[in-house]
Image (cartoon, rainbow, N blue to C red):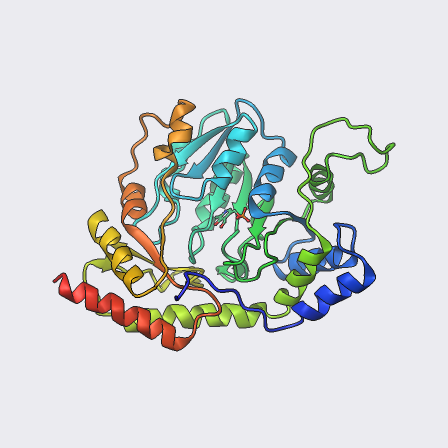
Length: 371
Ligand SMILES: Cc1ncc(COP(=O)(O)O)c(C=O)c1O
């Protein structure tokens, strides 16, 4: 089996984990937490890092820490994982969806301004699959309309936009450390920001909103237990020591697929670069010319024990949101096409060159039969 993802542990993971066990620091109180927070936030050029239990939790906290609440509108792409959108609805706020771009699969920044109203409180940018969102127009809109910016950089640790790190733009930016990410903590996430008051709010919200200076067990607001453990942070720190190697390998994997599949017909390959960024190939995705071809390809590759994953599903097509009377009349043909025709190939850090060549060969054979 060539799974769609295999993580890579080639550094100090075991050593740091043993240290946790030997010292007994296994909860969220241990010393690896602040080390990981400091070093990761420093890596993405932010002053503060707040480690949490996963990337979805980070988004819940981000929305609440920025005081986004009932009636507020937040602009977000329709083609995304559900996490950013459910964090908006969880807070009683209203997600306002934006079409995605055919070329980068990211939100179409030219379609944002027409959706801004006097209720718009924030833009929630989601960087998707390997290329960042075009940030300059977003920064301009945030300034022009006095909007908050949240950056979901869950997939793009180490990626840059015009030489500036993804995750360094938002009033709050969030990351995930799920095992398919460039660095993992098993499950895990982090919020990063530059504002000390916002950082304190996030810390409080991840810890059941305990008052940092008040009597313990008296609460003035509702938070969550979204804490990361010292065990997770130990793995995270070891992974962070290797992040540049991981990113380099991801780009090698992407380029190898690009070369192998350069002549493929009936599928759109990812863009290798844009004017502002080089693809980091968090995953290697393709968009087939139609949904049947996408489904048939996935079935064909499965015959050779090659794992694939379908692309995200559009938010305006989600039964759960339609039941909430959301997005009923929304239509976003580009995002719909990307979602129904897209899938990604094995892309994990543990993938070997031979496996990439094998997957490419099987895909090319199949595509040639279809011509
Ligand atoms: C863009 C994006 N945001 C948020 C998340 C959620 O992160 P987690 O799985 O850690 O909750 C993911 C997960 O892959 C993601 O891709």
